[in-house]
Image (cartoon, rainbow, N blue to C red; front, side):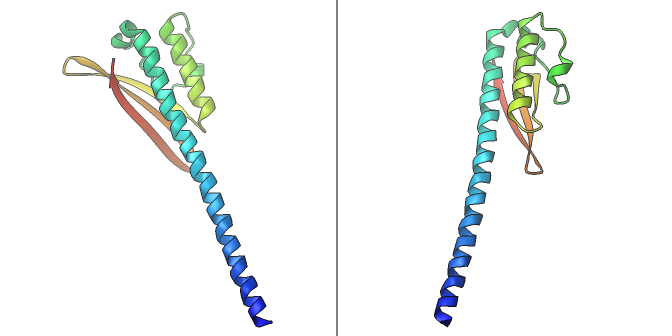
Length: 133
């Protein structure tokens, strides 16, 4: 009889371990999805900027983290329209998502830093990439 109780106890602990493992797997899967989306979003905005090089090099694409899609009112140029669409995608796909584009001059060439920030389980995650056109 005691052997049966011990085996049930061992089985219960094993099942609790499997439930914990499953919940961690789901959490890591969600984190991986957000990171993949952030990567795809940075690639998307860089491709859009490459299609509009003149405005990108002049700084028309620059935007801060605190700027949201609603703050971009003029959509008469390609830069404004694409920047607004990109900001909407960042806000929609990532929890509390924010995106920034910063242009700097390095060695006479424009370098662009794309930053995507989102909240994940109480922590702030940041994905940053640098590229030139």
